[in-house]
Image (cartoon, rainbow, N blue to C red; front, side, top):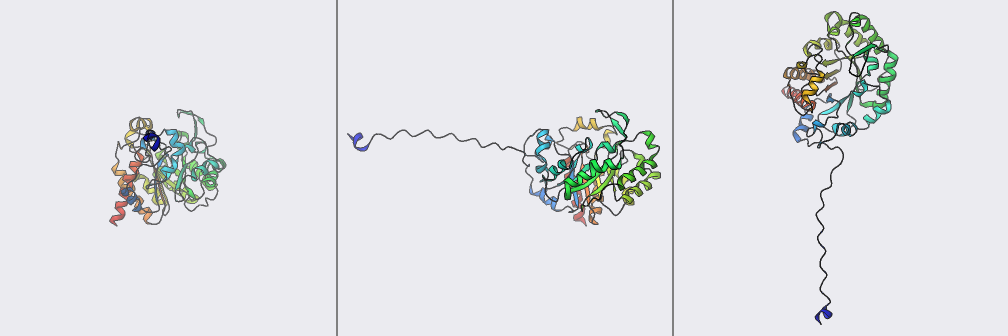
Length: 348
């Protein structure tokens, strides 16, 4: 009767829903950058832009990226995260050396970074290498397009300026090692370089500069340095400091920069001298996955930091891009260099 009067027993309660696993984050996300990193960035000269050579390195997990990603994923999706790093305000686009990029290619890069970011871009080997090379880098034959002014404008400078716009930084002609027949006629090559540089369209962007990087010490010899400086100065271009085992150390390159003063500084820190002039593959094998410093180079840090502090302190722009092959891990090299520059500013 009670069941009829008060109703039947309550139905059994439904089992509790299992706790949902937290949704997995997709995409590329930044590593945790502490307040000390932001404070360090705030102490750097605003005209100084530090960065790396390309950005698609999985080994930078915990330094730039939060999680593990493939090189392909980072190449496609990593740049916006890279550009948010407090210290990384420039990057070198290196793939342009292997084939010319279009204005649309450059525009896609520019759309992924903030307005105060600047790109360093390498000219295609089409005009920057005196030799046509096989895939393994061996010379096959002379390159008839080497230092061709029209091709340089059409395949490099014009599309880069159009696509990058105000985010254009340094447009670098990295001239590959010359064959002996051209090294023996370097004054003629210098005049061809002058013709190329003077034929380029107006840059039209406040921070844009043409720069020339070399791979043979003969360019910096006393009998050629003055001629080289005159070619650059007459063209409104500058010399790109090349920290590479094929070249003299930084201290022996600075006299050329002094001949061009005042003007911006462009530097590409490429390969630790411990590996020798042909040690790229050795560095690659030793340093991968590029997650720590292997060969510290304190002397280069100290001199480069003093040079950057002086240049930026006098109102000039400076662009420095660093390869993983400089010390083993480019983001950590950037941080060490930033700390030294900041310390010099605090001491003034």
